[in-house]
Image (cartoon, rainbow, N blue to C red; front, side):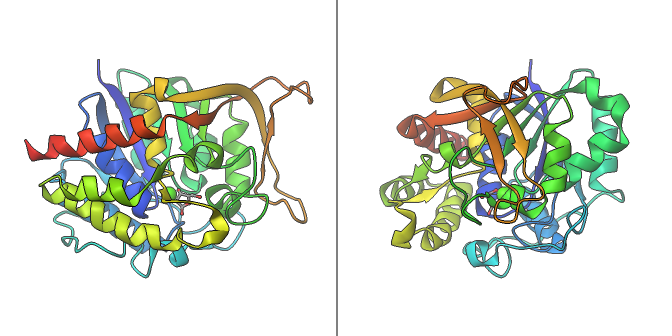
Length: 312
Ligand code: BDR
Ligand code: CA
């Protein structure tokens, strides 16, 4: 049976690649793509989702825009990583279709309500929309199978020393989501910083002769620039968001640990930190399946093989 999923994202180079990876597979029934404000302003992330789906010829997937700012804070964007458009690099088509005349929360709620099987939510941006959905539709929790998210870190952050970008942007939303009692798998920086795409992988993708693979290679050529700064210690660029889809498709590529995760909303230096209780020190029940390691070569093979399917 195919797994019903909803992608809630802020494209964003790695969000776009996560969408492309997800839609290459017949393991999923994509019910909707909704957009969050994060990597760029909400108008741009919505437009980018429409442009990627247009490129993929998937105007059949309903799209809706979400909250225009975090729950309790002003929006911070990552244009230093993703550029002026949020998807700088490739030439993308203009959208061939319009978003739904409803909000992201309304569209998610409708699709979850209609779904005969419990739905997997895959947020790869700030958790604003997911928090609002869970808060306003408690009756739908039982039809949500799990939340597989990119965000957080057990170790160091990438936006502050303590916090990863998606959680830092809207910690109040993340706090609500991690407390909701729905099974969570967290693809944090511990694992995504290992999921690096190297120059030779981009060349491998570039050699796949279809427009989708060419777009991914163009996205990566831009995305890798920010990550070339030696301070990060990277060889390539960390493909954060596609780890969510890779875990759903091939969990055997990853190692994981069940742990309690709390969100720091008040810390002077630690706002947006995901506090991961690896040793059970708090006595709190584990609420999250935290991913730690990835078979990088297997991950790149999955990505390349998925891009090859667009040639057929
Ligand atoms: C996360 O932040 C964004 O820039 C990426 O799209 C990813 O979701 C990594 O911290
Ligand atoms: Ca993202």
